[in-house]
Image 1 (cartoon, helix red, strand yellow):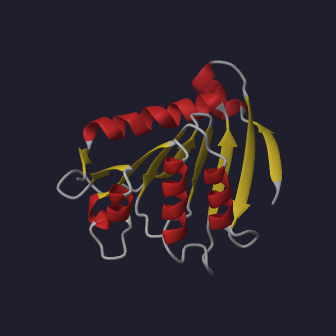
Image 2: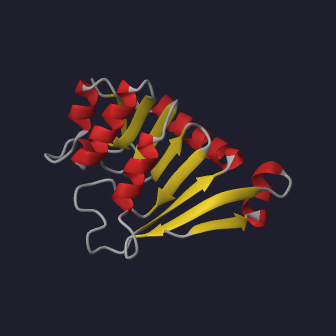
Length: 170
């Protein structure tokens, strides 16, 4: 795993009005097991995890979310309504375990195709990696793990907008 420290002047200065520094880790499926990295990140959570995902079918990732909730982490998921209804979806299991899930898409405008997580309000994970069974096995995928409060705030605002607008699955 390569740990990269970059100054994101052009991106973060637009968010904060001044230069900012972020800690960024770039992971590529040809070099590391991205799912294992995600599991490790989830295990370190102490307060919140907000996920906006197209689909979630990985049993290992779902179990990590359930364990996080059991540790007292507030876990919320926004996912695509069509994907939530497919047979391999783990959405119903999340709900049965007390995790709040909302969907969007379907009759609404387009698919919910975000791929991001906000960890403890301080860290963002985003990229092409899908949170489904088999993702990363032979595929060319990547994620960025970015620790920066300003960027996390921007993603949190988008998550909250989605959360307010969409319906709860019961």
